[in-house]
Length: 213
Image 1 (tube, rainbow, N blue to C red):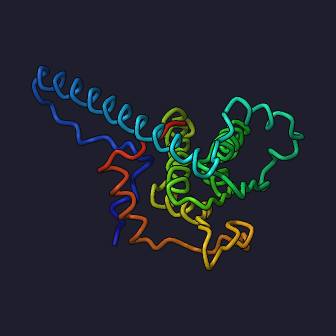
Image 2 (image 1 turned 90 degrees about the vertical axis):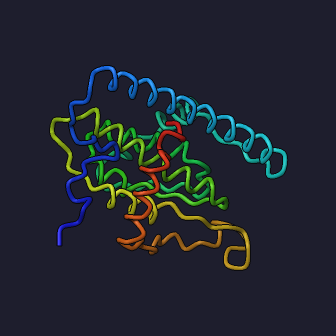
């Protein structure tokens, strides 16, 4: 039986084209823009408060993107060849990984191959979830901006990749030293049903609007 997500190319799935009155279209557009802006502002406020509070208790601080790019520019050109993998054992919310992914895309790696080649771990579950969403958003934006060739990507496949490649290693009985106790095999594979449910959450809760890249 055909999967209902088979024909989806990216996460911004257009609604069926209907011809409502122009005034209605305009009103809906204004409402949507306002809602998106409010969601982003609220998410940023919550995000900033959370980071400030956590910085006091865990000394967590993320490398800014300009510094990440300065460091990546110093790497030899060979690291951007096909089949080269990157792993950040303390990835936080993904500042290094999203810039690595962007550079791979700029070097003409296919979106799926590029995404499959980045890995990360973090001890904080919310960081891991944010990192996964940011990676998805980078791919989503890239696909929208590059219509030729037209990429046919399944959002379910994308979700399964980031779920497998970005691992939470919370400090505790299983990982007393966080990612230092992880074997870095990234074996956990998300089920099709779980991936579809996650896709539904991302769409309905507009989760990609709540993260920045």
